[in-house]
Amino acid sequence: MTTTIPLVHRRQAVRTSMRSAGIDLLLIGPSAGFRYFAGRNAILTERFVALAIGADGRDVIFSPRLQAPLYETMAGVELRIWDETEDPLAAVAAKARAAGVRSIAVNAEFWSGFLLQLAVHLPDVSLKNGAALIEAPRMVKGPEEIAALAAAAAKIDAVWAEFVATTDSMVGHTELELRARIDAMMRAQGFSEVTWVDVGAGPNGASSLHHGSDHVIAAGEPVVFDFAGCYEGYYGDICRVAVSDEPHPDYVALYEIVREAQELAFRAIRPGVAAGAIDAAGREHIAAHGFGPLFTHRLGHGIGLAAHEAPYIVASNDTPLEVGMTFSNEPGVYVPGRWGVRIEDIVVVAQDGATRLTQSPRDLVRFG
Image (cartoon, rainbow, N blue to C red; front, side, top):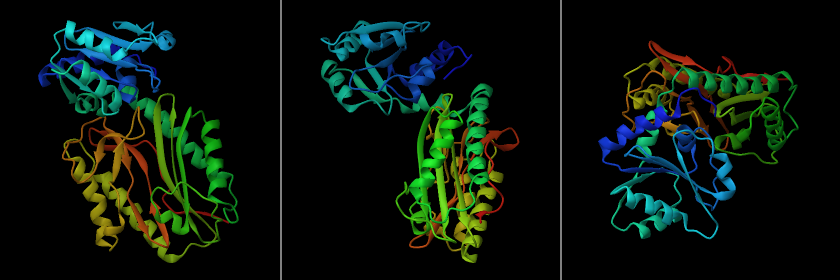
């Protein structure tokens, strides 16, 4: 991730929140949260790496010696290098004791083995979940982050456009063959990470996360494509459907219901509206057509430095939307034994509604 926003400002802002929450030390292991506050990736291995943000204004990176060059140029952060013969959690405990720390919060992805070691070293210190402290500032994107997400969105839309332009028919090809084509196109577009490419044809499309198989696609069989990846530090994620030859009329009708549900959800987005209300806007339309039980997942998820992050667009989430929140809008219906439909686009909350960063086709894509 590259940013012109001084990372020290991000750490100072979370420090204020820590003090309000009574947290003395925020310990963030390798994760999107680490990237947000440190400005670079941490390698997730059995060797302990963490950014420690202190309420006292002192921040430290704990790093094994072989990874230390990755963090030597970080401004405003002390680098504490540990050697292979050392216990790095003992070093964290020593910092905590020296600073009079009574409470430590960790990120949601913090390895439980490290946390258990820390508890042994600091039996009198309260260990807490720091996810809310880390997620809250990341939910609202500024102009620079929105531009980065827009670039990732344009690239992933370009992948689908290329696939459509270069495909005469899917008949006779396997799901895995189509998955390999999408994967190659993503890498050619500059995605540094292909996070997933799921391809489900016919009844396999009724499994919302079918990854792909040797199933050979037949004429008239709809295919669901869900793919995501990281482009220059930020993620793109879309879901599209297509069919070769003539689709069944029932499928065309179902596609239209899901497309309408997505549009109704999009129109409901505006600052101050609860995230759960956006889920309801799409879900109620699908339920009204008798497919409610077959819409088996939330309407959407946040996206940014991670493919899935807060805010989650789910019925139980009463978080009010804010300008700059960016998330997927992806209603779906999955009919066991027949097929599935999911249409996914990325949107950003604006002052007067929402803006699409990706653009799904108005009509069902047909080949042949």
